[in-house]
Figure (cartoon, rainbow, N blue to C red):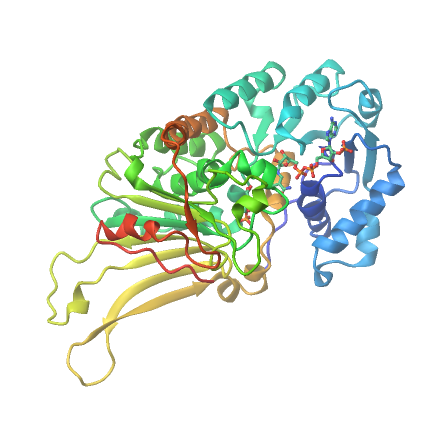
Length: 484
Ligand SMILES: NC(=O)C1=CN([C@@H]2O[C@H](COP(=O)(O)OP(=O)(O)OC[C@H]3O[C@@H](n4cnc5c(N)ncnc54)[C@H](OP(=O)(O)O)[C@@H]3O)[C@@H](O)[C@H]2O)C=CC1
Ligand SMILES: O=C1O[C@H](COP(=O)(O)O)[C@@H](O)[C@H](O)[C@H]1O
């Protein structure tokens, strides 16, 4: 199968924070891969912007090193890298001062798509928006890309929305949630809305519960200062897991169109029930075998921030009332795996004597790694031993089913940056969506802060705190095993 690459219009893309970690690890390598795929027009330019005074040559050398480090050698070559690097420019600019803005203005060319990527600390988002406007660099056709975190609660998210809205319309603002750019996450919509098979069963009458797991093996090292003010709830649940939940739970949009999709997601977030304290388990990874624990990594010996969270979430609408969604995410767990498991209800009556005849079907959508779909179905055990039943997987790996294209899955940032240039907001969060997600998360966070709760310690390399098992056990259910 040959993947289709649709070229975008020529662009000038400014990366504020062009020398930072995100630019080096994700943005520049993603742009290089799009260049290699033939999606980036020859006339396009990428303009790095940061305070450090370096020459264009030094910036290009930095970009070359980053791409060499973060793009596997099998996916790059010297000639194309040199050709790509030629598209880079650099402007030394201070987001909070006057230096560099005039020069940036001169770099922007008429007739190009103008996009400004805010890959800097969130405290600078407002200042950059204001200066772009003040110096006449951005106009009504420009786009801004805003990184996470988008606020730390409803109040700050509202304030940021209001600041950006002073200078840009909602159609110009692209709030990144990189989970939406993941190929398999987009596939959730294809699976649901391009197949007649699942939709009739996609409701509480047939679905017993849903498990959403995003497990990581990495610690918070290096990002401790940020993470300790955030925790798993703000860092992962309010945004990424929330988006996954929405894609599973939303009604079919009338069209795959930015506002149609985002309207449906918003309705789900607004229908979320408040989460009771007994439906939340928070954890912190402990030190092990000389390896730092969470508090060491965070540099805060008395930290109450969670590096793990599991919650039981209800949706108060006709489709989902009575079907709990169990969410969990954490750092330093047994394996890196993200998946959604849909547990169907058991058949109302089994005609077989074999107790296996009453088992449920489970649809597992594996987001990463080993992207694919697995459906557990009951069949007759082969052989003459009577009507004995067994559960087997119908297993589809995208890599196997789609050939080279299935395993060569583009990074989320590749897709999202090109969508910005194309002017397609479907995979970006709208301002009201972000605010609704905070309106749901705020009381949950305030609850444990008011109660001064301490997270449970858990051993690194496990599935998280023991208490998280109870969250399902007491409902007569079990988490799926965390494994790659
Ligand atoms: N790194 C990651 O994996 C992820 C990052 N993000 C988000 O992306 C954004 C950037 O993160 P990250 O790259 O890690 O941050 P870094 O600290 O690595 O980089 C910050 C960048 O901003 C520049 N900068 C700082 N102050 C100014 C200023 N006053 N004017 C102009 N440029 C400035 C810095 O260069 P200089 O000092 O020379 O000015 C540098 O290029 C943040 O919002 C973060 O939350 C989101 C998801 C993942
Ligand atoms: O946004 C974030 O996501 C990463 C996990 O992303 P993935 O693509 O590797 O699944 C997480 O590690 C980080 O803490 C968070 O800020």
